[in-house]
Length: 105
Image (tube, rainbow, N blue to C red; front, top):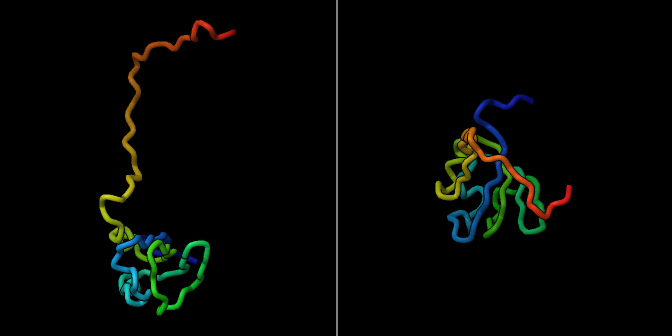
């Protein structure tokens, strides 16, 4: 199977107060954004290939396949994790480490 660039699998979390709570999967319009729900995780329950008329509840997790940009846009900017930390060089003039006086050889 070949997957087009820009598509992938991601998990979408439905927090308390989300506009998705109380909506059906079909009512979320994910499909119109080229996002397919593969699995619904609800507590300890796993619901593979959930029906379009399934109503979403707070704390549901949706395993989805679709456009990565569309899924990325669903995550509020303030909760996005930075995936590329800035790496800097260590200074070359670091002091040498010494053993504590009470350490044994």
